[in-house]
Image (cartoon, rainbow, N blue to C red; front, side, top):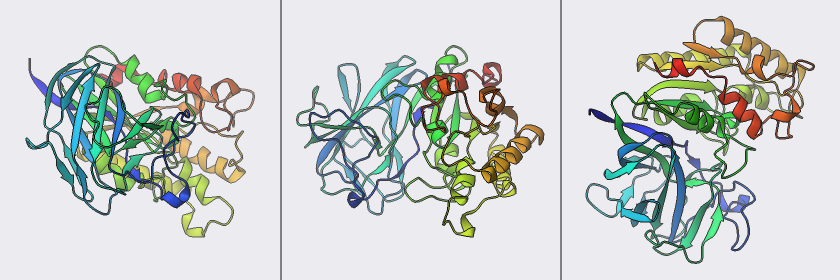
Length: 387
C-alpha cells in the first residue's frame, strides 16, 4: 500500500511567560489547577501526552524552538505507547540542538499506531534555566522531573502542569488517501474552559466524527487570545505571521477551518487601547482575504466560520456587535471561502440572538463548555472534509 507522512497531532507554539509573571508548574502533590506553563526548565525531563487523531505504521516527532532566543540542547528523548519506550534519534544521534527559531523532526520510529492513541513524548533538557517554546493551554496533564528520566516508567519527584514544551507536532506514515484538516484560530479553537484531560475541544470531537476512510486527521492550531492581524503580548504571533509555520509546514494538509478575528475587534475596543490597535470589519476581511489567497496558492481549501455570539460577556459592546454582524455577513455572502460553517446561526439563543444558550457556555459568556464544543463539531460537513 502506498503511504505518506501526514500530521496527526499538533499544537501552535508561543514563548513561555517570564518567571516574574508567575509562570511555573504546580507544586508536588497538588492537582494542577491552571494552564500556566513553566517559565524555565532546569536540567529536567518534561513528559507530555498527545493523542493521534489518525493511525499509521511509523511515527516522527516535531520539536520547535520557534520563539527561543538561544539554541536549546535536547540531551535525550523518547516516545512511548503503553509501557514500551523507544529512544528518539535525530539524524541517527541521541542528542540534538534546536537552533533559535528552528523546527526539526526526529528520525522515524517504526510503530503501529491505531487512531485515537495516546503517545507519550519525554525530553531531557540537560542545561539550566532554559526558556521553553510552549503551548500554554495544553489541556493534558504533563510533568517536569529532575534529571534524565526519559525512559522511566514512573517519574520520580515530578510536578504537574498543563502545557506543551517544544513539542509542536506528531506525524504518522499513513495511507496515501489520508489527509489533515487544520483548525486555525483563537481560544474558541484552542478549547479554553473545556475540561482538562477530556479531549473535549471541538477539533478533537471533529476528529472522532471523521473516524473511518479515507483517514482524516484534525490538528488544533488554536491559540487563546490570538488575532488575525496583530501580535498580542504573550498570546502568540498573529495568524498572518504564523500561517507558514502552523499551516503550510504541516504535512498532508488539505483543509483549513478558520475561526478567528473576534479578538481583533475585542482588544481594539478595550478602554485605553491606542487607535492603532483598533480593527474594523474591513480590516479583518482584508486579513481573511490574505489567508485565503495564501492557502489557495498551496492548493489548500478554507472553511470560514462565522463568529458565535458573546452577548453575555463583560467584553461585549454594541461596537463589537456591529463588527461581528458585518464580518459574519461577509463570511456568509462573499463566496470567497471554499465553504462556510455558520456557527452564529447554529449556536445563538433564539430568545436572545446576541448570546449563546447557557447550557453551551462555560460561564464567562464567551467560551463554550464541553457541550458547546461538541455542538460545534457536529456542524461540519464530513463529506466535504473527506474530499
